[in-house]
Image (tube, rainbow, N blue to C red; front, side, top):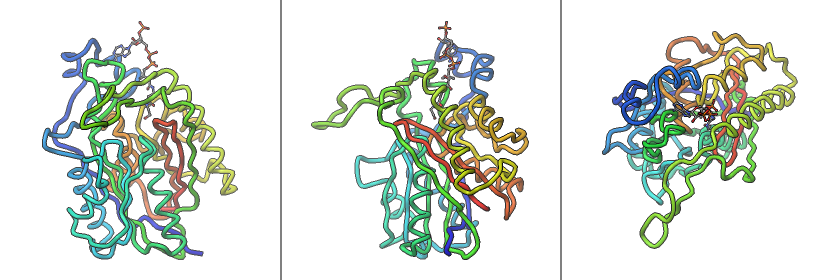
Length: 319
Ligand code: UT7
């Protein structure tokens, strides 16, 4: 049996930090409300000339370095993003050109905040079946570009960033299982409804969210995915060493940890400093946990996310 193993991780955050105090000058909000309702204290915002591919490149270079993999070895590049540099080519192809790889399969995955979980799951199948021997999987966003900075219900929540992993085949696990779901019936609860047509944007190009409805669905869906993942692997909650959750809201993260009966010391939490970086949030959190030494080889990790669509999913990894 062949498994995919994560052989390197990388992360990148733009230099500019936007604090809650600064947001108080933009919209009718305050630090106390934001921290209490979301756990977010600050987030990083890309510079005007920085795009998703720029962020992805930095994260990918760090992951390749950690994996000690030359870019020529990579035969699959999958990038999760909601904020691609262009309508096409895909940001994965732009990243491929930037990194100097020729010939690897490269494509984007659009599953909003679940983008990395979807991308990792797809890459796992390629590696497991022998269709790829070395995969670069990235989640990268300049989410700030699709925020209405007059809408206090959304602009306080998100940030920009990128995270990446390199996957290789191994006889030892590895990714144990992946679980993906979507339900387009919820398409209007979290959406950027605009479309490009005839050379211009038709409709609204900003994030629209019914926060409370999204919150309730998220807590429930993530509870269910915990059960589904454990059951599929015939594992007890106690088998999980680290929860590496999507970083949308500390209250959603706490609810999932509670379901797992995991103390918060066993949860990688970056939401306070990163905010919600959409597809970048899980790989960024993973990279933080790996680089600060909390996540060790052999640890059992549960990665999960939920986002617009709705889309949601999990990946169980023996790191
Ligand atoms: O990545 C996955 C997608 N996103 C999520 O998972 C986000 C899910 N949703 C949430 O995290 C939460 O619903 C929010 C943080 C967005 C909102 O928290 P909430 O506890 O659901 O608040 P609410 O929307 O029910 O609003 C409560 C009150 C309202 O005032 P009234 O009507 O009670 O007078 C809002 O107008 O808080 C008000 N409010 C704010 N106040 C200060 C909403 N946004 C703000 C704000 N600052 N930024």
